[in-house]
Image (cartoon, rainbow, N blue to C red; front, side, top):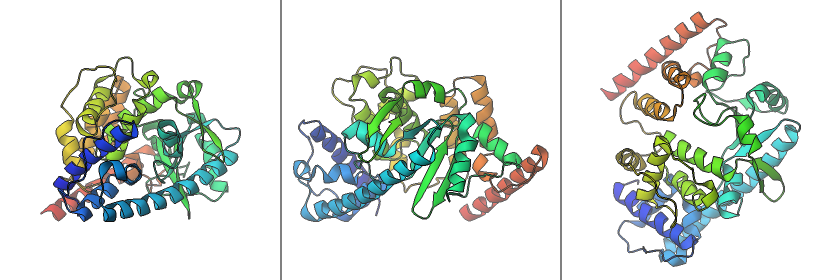
Length: 369
């Protein structure tokens, strides 16, 4: 059962584990303040099993907790190893198309030296916008299929809308999922484009394969933006920021408002590494972060909650009038909600999309009542 008390205790445990990881005194040890099952539920919800399993002794975690964390860690690492093989296969499939591997095992290597240290998950690839169609053609020909929320019907208006106002499409095969990105997020100018990211790329040795990935500075910038996009609702994303911030070369020269909000949340929850540069902290995002961390993933507090959260983030992430205009369009007509609209013209597609959205909203309002 996910409880606020267990999440609060988990934050202390994660802060202590990160301190121990860096060779410092943890400053927190298990005292049985919450039921063990609640603590484990919180650890799974926040995807920090591997981190805690590696610091069982320093944190004095009891035997049942240690055993369960160890089993979860082993399962996560097996999944991560399977994803590494998928990354290698995708690299061969996309040979000749420049692409960056985001998050996942590449980020695990950058932050811990171990490609399995973040567990398994989807494979995230970034290509230049001009390479989306050739990359997609190869994936489809190799048996990958479009998932719900993405469209590959290039005759439909929703395809053009997706490319302009979205940033990824999701494809799957029975054993894996790949998210193909052409921008880091939905803003047009808020995050660096592919050419700049590629020029600064780093490489990560995953064992069977070496892949191109974001530079440490770009990875930290993306982690700050991504954690804010999700309302800082998962501790693993904050752990990523903490670990990336250990590299002085990765620290932003002048953190913008969004970066400062994320850094402030990390500092107040799981902590920032000793010696990180000073910045103008803000408490603006902290109440929301603590509130969302105590909820199940994707929980809605009210109808329209996700739209409000997206617009709040996107306006803070925007760097141009084009970004602000794009935020309005995306909030009104989310590309993933138009994926199944096969209309060829903008007018008909928008009418169908708005009608579907209105019906979903009414259905949610009835559920609340």
